[in-house]
Length: 79
Length: 79
DNA sequence: AGCCGATGTTAGATATAGATAACATAATAG
DNA sequence: CTATTATGTTATCTATATCTAACATCGGCT
Picture 1 (cartoon, each protein chain N blue to C red):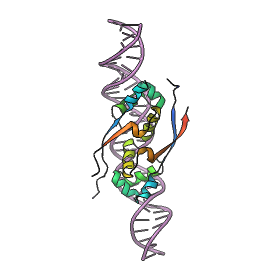
Picture 2: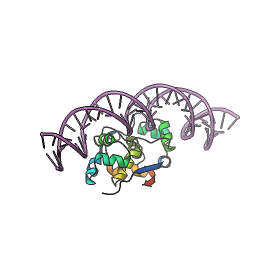
Picture 3: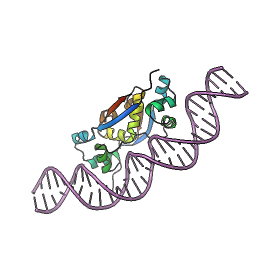
């Protein structure tokens, strides 16, 4: 008798790759600036995992944008 | 090409508690809507950990705001 | 004084983010 | 063509977010 959650997030897209290209950065460049591994950036671009808020923020800062601009959520909706 | 800044995030504040009060929700109410445990909301409010981006998003949606409005980052600086 | 709903806090378990190293492939330069 | 650089991908490891179940504390209410 628990109630199911109201918010569902089906999928999350990111504009990391697009913005990284705009600034002509390699995955490794960006990774170095953010302070993570190259693979981590690669996995993020491919949506292979759900970053921590701090990581999302750091990537956004390095790409001169905001979290809300960098990540796009597609909702399943409010039920 | 600029000199590679390394981003440091010293601390993160959140307005969860403030907004939760505005909508007159208990931690448990919000937790149920978001789909996490009450303690998780409590720990988030106290800055005891760094949520995933999806969780941050869901909390923001439940509080009628955005991630960028809900979480405030204090930078250590671009160095 | 009690009770009760909300929050704090702990300890242990599980899930997963992110690290690391390795190797493969694509594209590009030479 | 080979050499190199950027990216894809896999497997294993560690750190930590989140779950779960307790129990404590605090505040409001009668």
